[in-house]
Image (tube, rainbow, N blue to C red; front, side, top):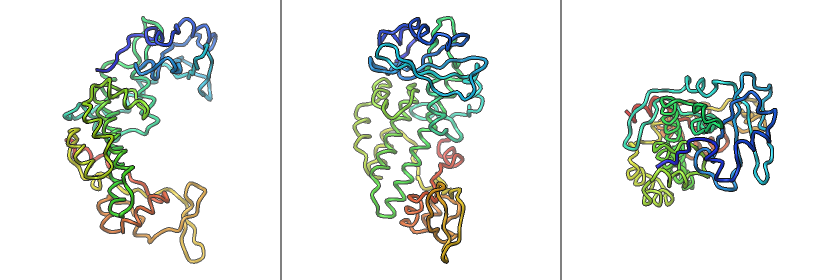
Length: 321
């Protein structure tokens, strides 16, 4: 079961630090603000060597807000300012529509970029310094965040599996992507079980706290191919899906130049890349792209960042419903 902390004092006791010592250390930087412990300690994943991460909520955060660092004995204390109500405001943009899967609820609609996932995962597990303060998010908001974090992990499962599919079709090494698809599946299962503090380094602690079947973890670690991932996905009770039907090929946003009889794209404002035939640079489903364009050329365009694979939220929703 997920490790549940009730307040910052209990969480900080693991490393022998008190909320009073932190307030004294921060001094005027904490005046007038509501302090919340975030990060691994708040989520019940920390150890004696963990940093102390704090978010301070105030009516008037300083302009150009950047993380600040203090030291308390051997511990690093990082803190950031945010405006009062920022966590609740962030939740208003999230999809509250969900579907029940065998392992838990999952949001419908597009998942979030990692930066947004990371911030929400900190807020949903945050603990107040003052016992009288409420948690940053209420029960309904926490459920919404949980569903969106599960969906975000499943979107990444699809994206990694799609890349593995392209490389398999091109007869190129793909094991890394099938392995990543399996690991993201485990992340999704942990999140569905209530382990909402995310990060690659926390996967095995999350899995232990979530009570995942050890045989599933062992199988997930061994995945290196499409067939192994398919068998693992059945064990994990993922809905059956064809990756190429759930992603779209997106053309990069780059300038084009005609040089010496060829057309080049300026990728990331730093590299000139010879562009393939115009028809190969069209936005379409990956399933269509694999029929219309050679897999080796698709793999090359992906490697050169001329195109990317983007999960199709509508197609994925249909598979989940």
